[in-house]
Length: 268
Ligand SMILES: [Fe+2]
Ligand SMILES: [Fe+2]
Image (tube, rainbow, N blue to C red; front, side, top):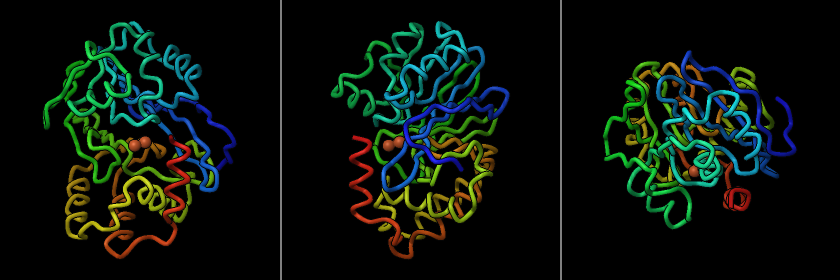
């Protein structure tokens, strides 16, 4: 793993014939490094999933233009309205005149208060509505934990890809091109640390309830897990096992109120 001293966009990585990961890395002083990913679905109706860090706006715009003709970009799926997910939204909307934002009622409302996006270019999904992009069906999935109530993940039934938004993210000692480069103990500690920062209420969650949600994801059996904050994972069992063992037994000692404050300051 490679230490990261400043935000950096890394080379794109192909996940399937249709899905491409656009990874970047954000140093978090005192805590390590947080992956911040966007994803691109190629095909007859290209769709960008989240828009990356505003600090990397130029690099992101260039990278997107390398991957597709921005005039062809049809959809921008927003997981939620945090700055690390909508950081380049307005710039990309300007560069991609045929793109429509996919969000929900609360996401649209929060963007309105932020002055981000354009209500005339939003497609609001109803709860549970299946979204089709280029004939590909994306089923909304509420991740097992999240930090904003508008959060929308999805499951692509064609490629068996699960997009989990902030869930399954990890604070890591440095960057890694693949999840296989991360030692198992480092992955476990990083995942527990990030989940405690992003969703501290997990520590109070009933173990049976969390277990049921994790079993449902295991049963979904995604071939690939796209998290906004982890290199692409292939299969979900390792990730759900970490959470199952970490919660319902008291809060992790690695996460303190001070940790949460540090991360909040970085992302503000
Ligand atoms: Fe978030
Ligand atoms: Fe995030």
